[in-house]
Amino acid sequence: MNETQNNLGAYLKLHWKTAVFLVVLLIGIGLADIFVDSYMRRLLNLCAIYVIVSLAMNLVNGFTGQFSLGQAGFMAIGAYTVAIFTVPVESRAAIFYLEPMAPFLANIQLPFVVALILGGLASVVVAFFIGSPCLRLRGDYLAIATLGFSEIIRIIFTNTQSITNGALGIKSIPTISSLWWTYGTALLVIIATILLVYSSYGRAFKAIREDEIAAEAMGVGLFKTKMTSFLIGAFFTGIGGGLFAALLGTVDPKQFYFTLTYNFLLIIVLGGMGSISGTIIASFLVTLGQEALRFLDEPMAFGLDLPIFRPGLRMVVFSFLLMIIVLFYRKGLMGTNELTWDFMAQKFQSIKKKLSRKKTSTEGGGK
Amino acid sequence: MSLLRTENVIMQFGGVVAVNDLNIDIKKGELAALIGPNGAGKTTAFNVITGVYTPTSGKVLFTPTDKNGTTTEIDITGKKPDKITTLGVARTFQNIRLFKELSVLENVQVATHLNTDYSFLSAIMRTPKARKGEAQAKADCEFLLERLGLIDLKNEKASSLPYGQQRHLEIARALATKPQLLLLDEPAAGMNPQETDELTDLIFKLKTDFDLTIFMIEHHMDLVMEISDHIYVLDFGCTIAKGTPDEVQNNPKVIEAYLGVDADVED
Ligand SMILES: Nc1ncnc2c1ncn2[C@@H]1O[C@H](COP(=O)(O)OP(=O)(O)OP(=O)(O)O)[C@@H](O)[C@H]1O
Ligand SMILES: [Mg+2]
Image 1 (cartoon, rainbow over the protein chains, first blue to last red):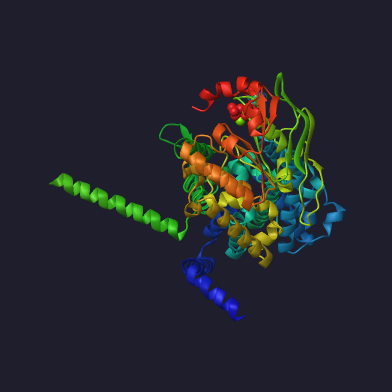
Image 2: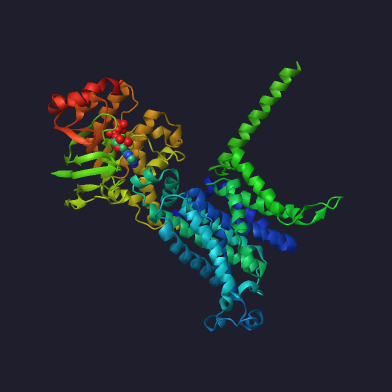
């Protein structure tokens, strides 16, 4: 007992800045949860969901070096699982009016958390079947397969009328409005990712990213290790999808186009492939940025009858951004670095040095 | 007792027979060398032994000693590289293949992953078992870095090390897999005579201290002749000579094929 207290004391002494930061963060979320209006609340919730899915994507793409583009598909699985199992039994007849819900599902209603976890697990099962052939091969098969899978899932969900209500989608999903669901989950995912990445497993992931042949020669089983990363990613993505459904209160196949995956790709490239803090920062930047640029999608004429702003322009702007990052800023905001206290202190020092140098040089020039 | 044997191994790439009928027999505890002119098939032989390539025909047999001291001959032909490493064969690469973005310490730690006896969930939850495993692995790695003179650089990025130290790191990393047989592919490549001498001493010491059997490809003749128990000479994939350094040195075929062109190989 005494020893664990000592340990805790030592731990806090070492990480007091982080502890303080966490406390401030939690208070911040608590305050936001009380005072923020419903528009901002939804936006903040969306940020947290994007953090979850992007981190999962970065785990597979950035840390393990396996190019997976199945985010929209895995989210769809999580979202539909939550939708199907949490919609109140009594409103199902009204929602499934074209074709009644399949009898084996019609009377099952699960608590939100259970449905959420079930959604994650369903993603894992599907991921296993995609990964089994693809992760044995070298090269870009995974990207192609996951991309195809995303489209197939969407088409399946459009056509399984008695389960997913087809193109009509499922409405009246009990919503979560509190920030604690999404931010609580995001925090758990962040912590789990950090702990995983800084473990023997995380190093094995990175070794595969760096050099598959060398990793294998050092005893890292390629298939098993890639699969571990892929399944963990799928689990978190499914959870993210479940939260997404519960945030919007409705799911339909159109929400899960490839453009959704594209957002996460943008986030991890912008934040830095292989940086947890970079991913978190970029999730907020992109989510809020897309909201700020929403006006681009609204038809608007400039004097003449020339509609420049139209739906889809936002995507063009974002694609352009992605190209610029890839061309000029290959490593993203953070590269593979993390925003630790040491890192910030270092940056601060170097900026200070640069500033003072500039000062002396301008002074010198003035004389 | 044989630790590693190959039986009539042939490795063909299309029309190129890179290794032609290779029969080696490496005894436990010895230091054997594989020499031959450029393109003779030496690295290919290593790649076949470590499972990077499955030979066109022939067998690779490895006889490790397990924890209880019993030995069993295992057919490792065409097994996956990580399986072969787990059985006790480790290697370094001729064209250095470090994990560039990882730190020196992490590079070595990766090689201890095969001994993790806890799941990724335990790793995430930092269970006592996982923490103990991590701590032990880290201590082992630091010990190895100490031995190879890299401990002060443990937090540096692997790619930032000078060339010679990268070669040392490759050896440290291979040792971290706890091998019984260590394959070194030109460990002294690009080193000056003094560095080569130091490396020779080091290899010899490591061999005794870690109870290793070593199979080494090397172009530095003085190094090879000084420390090898047995030498195999390849030329165009064929084994043109094998024996003790003295026997090989005086073999006319070897002189013709290899030592004759020694001048331009060894700068
Ligand atoms: N993957 C491959 N595909 C096709 N040919 C290959 C392959 N690997 C090696 N070779 C060929 O096999 C022959 C032997 O190459 P290897 O690398 O084993 O030679 P080496 O003895 O290690 O030479 P060096 O001293 O230059 O390292 C060469 O002709 C090479 O071109
Ligand atoms: Mg070679």
